[in-house]
Length: 257
Image (tube, one colour):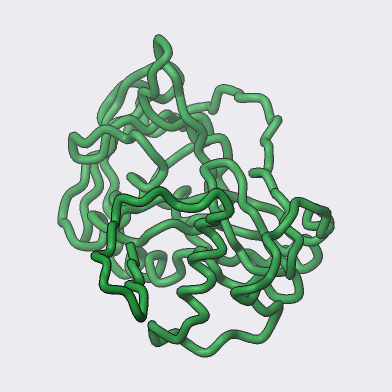
């Protein structure tokens, strides 16, 4: 909180005075950003942010659905909040953080769990997460002895493949999609409803329809836990992933060499 003392006043400053009715947190934030109090990086090319005296943005139509798609949202304590956005024309996907400028479209002004808000000038538009209406189907289990239904699975992974996947985080996050899996009204894991062919996920044995429940004994309660899995795969020699496949509980053990 910033409190500005009157320039010519002998009266003590009271910090418990109610804010005026016209007070706007967003406008106050813009005034702080534009005041020069903090050293900010040079503004990127693209739509300019609203000035301190500009009017507050209003909801409108920027035609986002015809230009971009929201593929996913990442919430992670260490890496922050990101949105995975795909260009409709080029199919190129990128990872954007709050206040990043999406080229020729606008500024990413808000990231929610199931939507983003893009701002250009005084206009804001809400873009919701891409809905996946593909029905869940049972995935056949391979006949090899290493993938017997309900039995522990073991995989040996080349550490260099893990490092290569971690170096391209936007690509990694766009190669699979997970949705909350509910049991008795509570989240008991995340179900994989999309896995890209020949992706890193496929290489480590994660299949469409799998319900991921624990990583090294830690409950999977949000998608960011998968980032923890990759971080552990990168630094540990052994990682265990508990999941449900075709209604059978099993454990996948990864060994890095």
